[in-house]
Image (tube, rainbow over all chains, first blue to last red; front, side, top):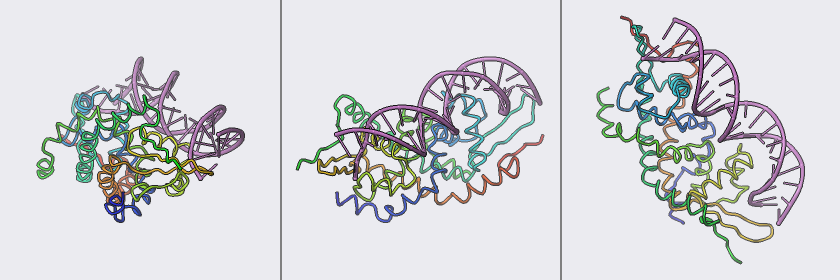
Length: 136
Length: 136
DNA sequence: CGGCATCCGTATAGATACTG
DNA sequence: CAGTATCTATACGGATGCCG
């Protein structure tokens, strides 16, 4: 319990300040953004290649997600005016800096997925699984 | 440029696989969850203390966010049946493991906020800021 | 091939009022 | 103090169809 206080030094004061960071966290925390950036982590991909890689994303969401990422300077869009047209998407240097934190988050999710799903299931069957009543 | 490819080893194959992790990422990527976990990183807080710390969150969203976190075993809810009632929220050991990745993401957002906002502004004034047309 | 536009159902989020 | 309940507005997200 005390360890928690020690383990988090000035984070306590910094994390709550991230209200101004909320828009940015909202984007990268977006359901699809993570997957798209992950797909692009390996290198440039074309539009339909992305659709196949992310698999499950609708055309609309892929387009919107990419547009947002391009606007934010995280993804570079390259148009080859050939016939048929070809569009490559790749991470910009800025976009690549996002890979590491994202991987950390990804690994966290992977490492603790079982625990979370166990807790989630327990919460549904037994009301008050992660709750506690302090008796006087 | 080549360094980027080297820096991302098998991530290329793992990140796209996180479709099954999407629900978990969706929770922690949630607009309020990050802020609530951040607020709790410093130690236990009561309901209204959380409301003040997160500031901007509605009562409804705080309640829903906390309920979700409790269900997922990331937050422990302790009820003191006093009058007036008192409820403490604190991170569980599992919840505390989330702090580090979250801080990494927070620091990324903080370090690159300016670049993103610059790119975002540039994209609005100049159409095609982060785009490129490959001429044949 | 790589989109954008449209429609439409649903999920989400805020404000408000009320309760134990 | 710590919620719950209800209503409403809007944003999100999918399916479809058309265009360069």
